Image (tube, rainbow, N blue to C red):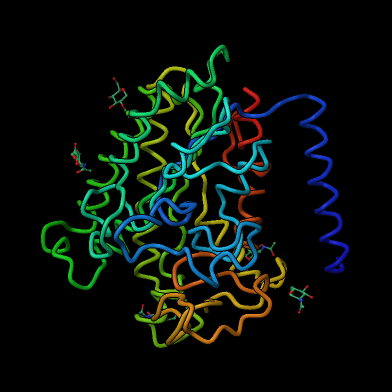
Length: 360
Ligand SMILES: *[C@@H]1O[C@H](CO)[C@@H](O)[C@H](O)[C@H]1NC(C)=O
Ligand SMILES: *[C@@H]1O[C@H](CO)[C@@H](O)[C@H](O)[C@H]1NC(C)=O
Ligand SMILES: *[C@@H]1O[C@H](CO)[C@@H](O)[C@H](O)[C@H]1NC(C)=O
Ligand SMILES: *[C@@H]1O[C@H](CO)[C@@H](O)[C@H](O)[C@H]1NC(C)=O
Ligand SMILES: *[C@@H]1O[C@H](CO)[C@@H](O)[C@H](O)[C@H]1NC(C)=O
């Protein structure tokens, strides 16, 4: 199909989706987001940390400019919120200044954060998963009273959780880490899964019922890992991809357990790994030209130096890149995988995708 035609068809199908919402009035009550920089809307902006992105050229294609998102445009949390009929979900650090009576949700995600408390600490301050959940617990009464009268408000909200990448990249695999001396890779996967399971059960105990859990992407394909670890700039680092895959299989079986043990709970596994590999291997089919080098960054594959305002910025056409910076994908990539999560075949039992999940 001709490129412009494809875009038109896509735009039309999105329009008709929105129309369907208006007619049927199906939308999630709210969306609560937990995780790391892949979904952080700027929660680290006021922290003492290197893990923040509230400067140009981040946000170059975002209506609000440089908000703290590690992206040229929207994150998957932004896209999914839109697909389920909600306005932009505000960051937790802006919560106290929010005046509206009913809120569309809150995003607690923090760049550099992981499942474990010590993950990403070399960046400075951040908010690990346990603390994000604590923040949610702290303002729970206020949220639900603002939503007063809405039956089963939390139970009808979407909980998006995406965490774990930093527990590898900025913990176990970090050059100065002592973890490999304490844990075999397998024992480390196990530790993460056990802590993650406890955290998801906490969110269930607090009232969450409809969960979309993002698996890890192919971590060996991010420009940072390719830039540092592989001679060939057109190949992913297999060893790192294998670690992500093993974590993902354990995550999937943990979620199966939660689905069968926790009543009325739905934990959808989001297979970002497979979607990413499909996009990387069939780049032109999706309109991408560059799959292994970043748009903004420096050094080999532009993966060795983070995206900074002082670096020469020569990336005119962001939609041709899978990766925005050494670690994070572009708006164009996020748009594609979010649509897959919403409409696509995530798993072969009901609910299959996010659209089914919020209609339950
Ligand atoms: C993180 O620290 C909190 C106490 O601040 C503790 O309750 C929790 O178990 C720790 N989480 C992990 C994953 O170690
Ligand atoms: C680099 O990529 C090549 C080709 O995929 C692979 O054979 C090699 O093992 C990789 N090197 C590292 C250090 O992973
Ligand atoms: C689910 O319940 C079974 C049986 O009580 C137990 O063996 C299993 O560990 C539980 N799994 C989870 C994820 O809680
Ligand atoms: C993408 O590439 C994979 C091989 O990596 C292939 O199996 C699949 O059919 C391709 N998909 C499309 C849409 O071209
Ligand atoms: C940007 O890239 C997309 C996808 O390859 C292409 O359709 C579009 O024409 C390009 N725009 C410019 C200004 O080069």
